[in-house]
Image 1 (cartoon, helix red, strand yellow):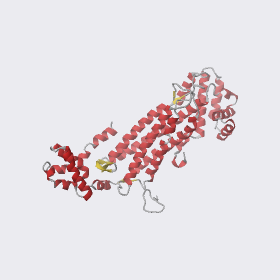
Image 2: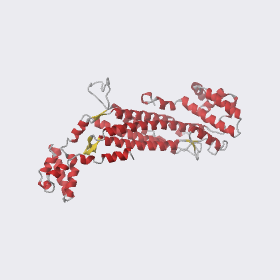
Image 3: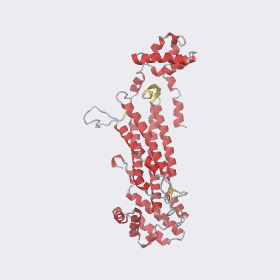
Image 4: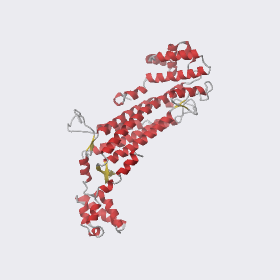
Length: 434
């Protein structure tokens, strides 16, 4: 997590100030529940609450205590006692450190999810607007990087919209799955703390009680969360890679916005590079790199070990901050993307009509020609058009085997672009109205 690829609101979720404030909220809510149960004096719970609410936790002081205790939660509790006075002796009764750490992590991941969901909403809006803008902008479809059949640039953007809509649904599910609290004690048996305390804290924090915790919340939840972020990052890369390909000089169908004063190269003044999309490709790799460690965190020893702890301290902020930045950057790229319809049409026509070969094949078979014979005939003319830079329709029109079953009018109809685009509205309705 570095400032260059971080936005303030997401970064703040992972700050020490936020973490210690959440720790205090967990402890204070637990103390309040214990006071309701008569386990601790109500006056003590209220005093701790007032002292903590008014306090600004001293990060340097907590770090100083931790250097001696070598335990972050004990360092915080010691500092809280310095603030709240003797009543702080009732804090953390029956709890274990992971009750605080895991519940805090759940709160942070939920807050991060909400920001990411907002990012996805913004991206979807940009994709929808540009998709409708270019719904009828005809371009060549490509498979294996080679010209295939016509499509529209709007359909490409609609495809991305459908993909990120699925991403939003997955993230909503992952948010719900990660949003659990555990305050069940040393090995999850509630031996020294009542389940009512966990329910109370969970409700106050907008979480659900973890059905069965050990000393920790089960890490399959976290694995699914980070896997979801990894899939979203892959979708970011897919769109970014498409833009990079389409901006290549030989293609130049789209181009990232190039602002006044921007420079593309220190050596070559003419350069206009897809640097934002390339950056998104790299950022996606960082997010995906957090998935495998999250998976490996699932298999902890017995009721708990701490092999997962160092991993999560790094991957939780790194993955969420990076993906937040990437989604916002992709939204900006889509919003300002320059589209060149004339170049798209020129590329569409580069192979002299070869993109209509399937229509000719189907028409020949429907006219009675055996498929293998029809395929061989069409391919023969297609290869000649490709290798000799000939017009495909003209070659077919001069072949007796073709004109014997297809007159020139019928042959011309097979090269009508509208045939390929007649269901665009249907697809758009599926994506945007379904």
